[in-house]
Length: 239
Image (tube, rainbow, N blue to C red; front, side, top):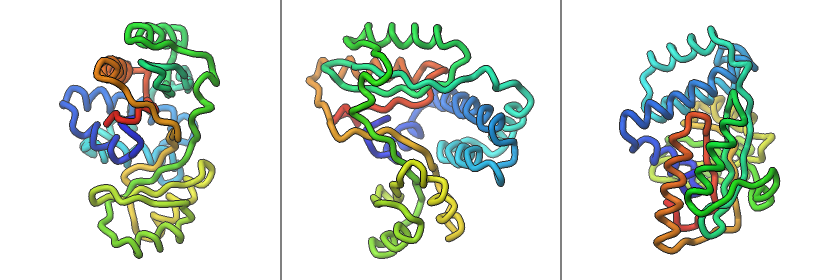
């Protein structure tokens, strides 16, 4: 992820070229296929699908594209996709968690190992860097609220904390309370821009100029891989 702010990550993706955004939406479409397999095609009853629709809209994807992707996802077999989180170290010991949806884990692992090796890192075993991260829920709202009103909303929806981000609010929850908090915000009349689990790290690593160049290239290659859904890292000075 681009830094540790979820909204910073959304802004980072919004700023990409049309071709890059098309690739991002291909990945969201894959997530939709899995969400539909697990919970059905109705976003009213399928909270995960509803969150993915909000995510797509936050990336300026037209409604007709979203509807077409949902229809396509419902028609094809998503059973071959499996969710895997790969762990490894990048340049100068930056820790990375790479969430993937793949139909061929050998291909994906081989691609990721090549990327890590090429830019001075190494792909590790499960648990090799996971101890440096903890999972939490993050809900992003487009809402220009004062601190008192935001705090009241934070408490009422059951979130642990909140942070204002350029006209947006980020609410942080326990992993198992994300869905409950999202529903509470919707019932209060708010439509989340995104609601998802993220990996956070309290231990941050800064890089010299050479390390920054290698890390940026590693992230570019990871994000360009269709199997990679999200990348989380503890690069402290990385945008």
